Length: 358
Image 1 (spheres, rainbow, N blue to C red):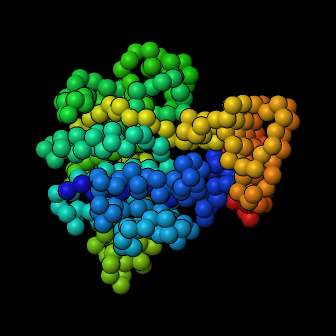
Image 2 (tube, rainbow, N blue to C red):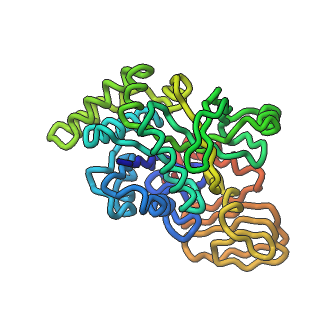
């Protein structure tokens, strides 16, 4: 029985000023005409029933998530009282699912990625799920690098471990977090590395066993929380235990330490849409190379991203390689090659007490 857990609690600061604490990236129609989370749920249609889909979010975003996640039962929205990174939220989802279905296979996915086409995604997940039911491996999904990007983690593949429905599965030699440019180029040239897509699949009991081995305090905490959910003590138990759990990613806590981790290479298009310039890869450009989601009139404007929220007219003359984002209370104008610094700008706004625009 396949279940899914969607991680939807991030702030998406690199998409400021559109992305805000209460209405972050995954809840905005940044591309495709619908909220990113809604598109992620659409992708699961025909693969995982909404009744077997869990969404992890936080208190500030829970109302917007519930409104977006039509069809997902209210009790399947796990509201984190504090951000503790991916290991605790995945552990809690696995604990909840395993109590409902001891033989559950769990797909873990971010809420804000682009994956196309859906039928190729379904084929890959079904193949991995078939394998996972018969072994005790943690499955990760690797994307063949199209460039020596320093924005992604890398997975080094080892010997072929299996083949399922025409897709090859390899043992994992090691994970490397966001290498420098020279290292990334060496990885790509070797042909031995995948980008880490951030999707995982495993039996719920297997990941819980690994968490108990490598992060026992997290295991004990989420078991107490899962046992209390749905009871009068549930909210108080969550508020007392969850914020005290170690803040750590699932890779650092488990997958880099576990003995049996396998990587399946995917053949679908994948993009984690990590910054405004990522829209170039997922949205069509006009004849001048501009990505426009705004009322815009321009002269000699090329290779820009122009996006606005409130039907505000944006006019441009003689511009190229810029990102222009307009919202009712804040506007960003940024060189396209500096979009990774938007997060640093948000940090500065916070230090200066401008919380009203965050």
